[in-house]
Length: 379
Image (cartoon, rainbow, N blue to C red; front, side, top):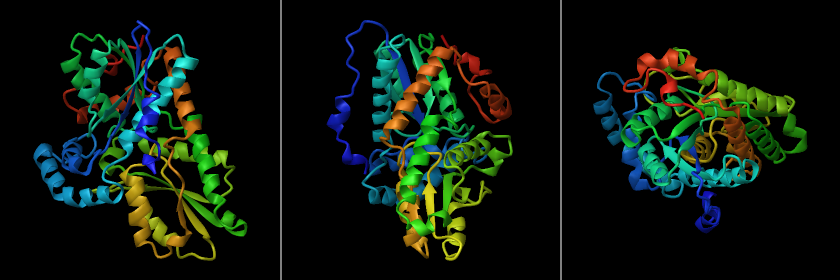
């Protein structure tokens, strides 16, 4: 459980350099979640008002507020069931703290490194992060997407919000930004997931293991966004294939999709429907392992949607297990630091794919840059 690591243990990791050199900011960017149950409505209002994530038509703000109001009570109940709030802030701050501590050791040229978290829909928001960066005298910052696979609905939404808020809180452009915009096949993602899957396979009887199906479950996406040419489905599939290569394809597997919202078509097949089909095939399927392949820590989609809702609806829950999330995995965190070091040393402001992503999605986005180079200038 995420509260097993105390706040005091995080406090001991906090950046405490006495150097007068301007720190390099490392900013973990993610969707976020309400830290406490009573913050749920604010979170949902921001989420459903973001047309990058869920396009709702010309009256997005009005419709988004109505949907948020209608869904707040039921979502609050779910957060209460997983401990009274989302653990995503806890884990994001923990991971970023540890990454910066390791970076100070392996990348003295860019040290000291200072950790920040910027959530799209919950505190700390992008503007909160920018205020802190300015206060701390940061002149160089790396925006590090904690969505390993790119989507215009997630990574790009955080990117556009960074641009909008930078115009308000850093109009002089005192902070030079670059962007780790995707890392779907990074060793720090592939290797820990493969290990965690192996750990879960060991919980099945030896004679049944080769008939255990691995279901990689990722957050779904509206087909409206997929049909624009969004990178997300292909990059999630790349992550899955790389993990299975590491496992030498020793088990059957599928990529499935969860968290569909509303009546419009979304990317499928849905996790619940595939589980329902497979869990009764006793001769051919001896078990199911769910792997949250597009998430870097636990939050409501894992702790409630998979661990509670799916199991409550299952006909044969005893054969269903979930691989652990990355959370405080040492190999994962160490590898994240390596990614930042490699990125800084490369001098590249962003990946070679980002400009094409922008070209395919820019007509659906408002109040942002005309080209990514306006925000990301590198060194």
